[in-house]
Image (cartoon, rainbow, N blue to C red; front, top):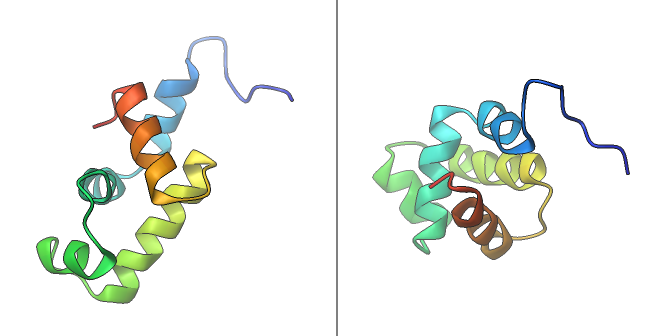
Length: 79
């Protein structure tokens, strides 16, 4: 597998740059164990919007579930 990095950026910085500020907020709440409904309520957004952010995060982090995303986020210092 070929790494998608540039000479000046490490993979962590690419991942951090690819996640929006709002996605980082959602990721933090995911790591705290919040449901989509709780995320929507805490961040004052519609439930479909919260679900969309979760899907985007999982895709960008190339993980299969919320637990993997939370573990990777902690390991990489994203949250």
